[in-house]
Image (tube, rainbow, N blue to C red; front, side):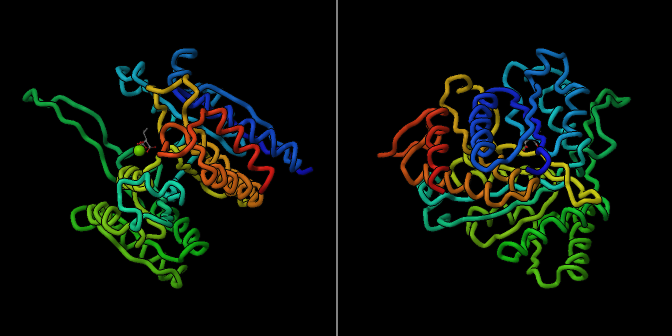
Length: 368
Ligand code: IPM
Ligand code: MG
């Protein structure tokens, strides 16, 4: 058996802990049936950490995240912590992990599972077979740019400032991730910015084009303004293969793309850092959905997005394509069998709890 794969699990708030329980069961099953050796640790994050430790993430947890082969996060936040000052909010933990682990490339697939095609608010023919990969830059842009802040001017007016800023290297490394992914998919990249109004967008377009021409001439590259992209996503979403864009546009476009699938509870994500000398990247995996405080603790949450995030971990961090496919095929299978948690419930389907969905998935893994 090769060295144990160390995973730090951060269940977080709301439905995070309950969906993570199902991931643990799947990890246990892989350990038993495929002799994969996981070394799984767990720590608090977000509101749970604020309540117990006084901060959204402790130094100890940051150090453990740095040391782990991969981090799996549930969700952070909830109404209980909404009124805290900006710097103490649960979300700060997530932003700190992204920044300090250098997780610059955020992969957000928007996939329509055939049995769920009716769940989309778009016509079925527009979304059947949809498979988009959004690559969002995650450690730069307006999320982290300086100067930032709120100040009071001499005339008593207040001014809020954030700065959109990108360097050559930041653009090129995230574009490279997008081109590499496209080569394993449909070989098409759409680069998205607002170069009609923003200098940072002009730079973005120029650097993506230069990298394309020098290193990826075989990939089909198109450019699109972010507002047009938002429109095209609902007009003709299947025109896209890989979309690469900055932090803020990526935040918005990935929510839009997620909703095309009609089932936010199904979508995983991966955030990857710079490759080290052995080609290994720091990585954090998390569902796209939030902590859903309204249904937390009721055992009705959909665990599939977190399970699919775990599958992405198997594939991208551990090169275990076989095990990843086994989990993903089991997900397709339980959907085809008509099992649905409340969020994706349809007429004629069988409504199941979080744990029952986990049970069905474990059983389906035996057949795949
Ligand atoms: C996301 C979220 C975060 C973001 C929030 C929770 C800080 O919306 O991961 O898309 O804006 O990046
Ligand atoms: Mg978001």
